[in-house]
Length: 136
Image (cartoon, rainbow, N blue to C red):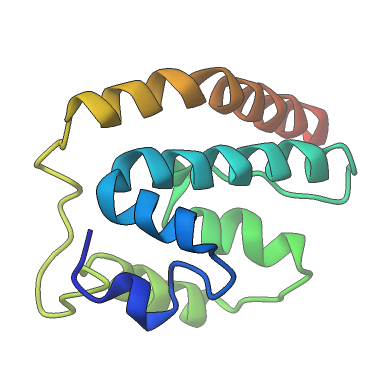
């Protein structure tokens, strides 16, 4: 976990003392719980057909092919070209070309989190694929 994350408030100002201790001692398990809650919220909200599920692997192209149209944005070819040019660079290091996450981080806690979240992820992915096929 990045130093100062808890103190910055990015971990949530509404954490109880017990949750803060758990976060400090078991960050992978804590964030697995957070991601599980996010997946569940995504599933809950996806029941409303007025939603858009996007898989990370669809990015960055999903911005101009799916997300823009979903919000009724009329993007010009010039704007799309500009986004495509910018999208090749790393968001946190804009002078570096983005190549993806080349260093997988697989601690036992991360592996456990993946197993815990896999059913929710698969449900989200099934719904995403179902929505995509319904729009075709």
